[in-house]
Length: 157
Image (tube, rainbow, N blue to C red):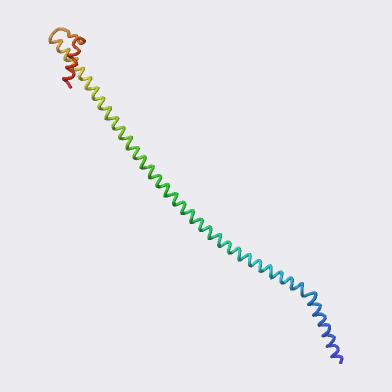
């Protein structure tokens, strides 16, 4: 009976210890384990969210980089077109200025030739008068014979 009483006493103590453990010891341990599990789950969720955010940020960065490259290419093309247009305008302006300079040079050359011709005519007329004066051995009045000299100039043309 001793064995049975000890067994029963041990069973009673075991159940009291089990009840005490379940009532006072087990809930804080379960609570701590649940809190730890929740923290781990939150950490894993945050890591997944961060991973998703990182992937989204990388995707946005790649898209922004692509857009920036396209915009740079468009700007470069527009600049090339503008440069080509400006170069063409500069060439046209240079050609126009060269043509103007040639025309001005030709006009000056024609004017110089006309001045030289006029000077030569006057010189020829003066020489003719001097020659006629020598021939006639008398002086011819240039003022009195201005009309005659003008006609002589016209004949030399």
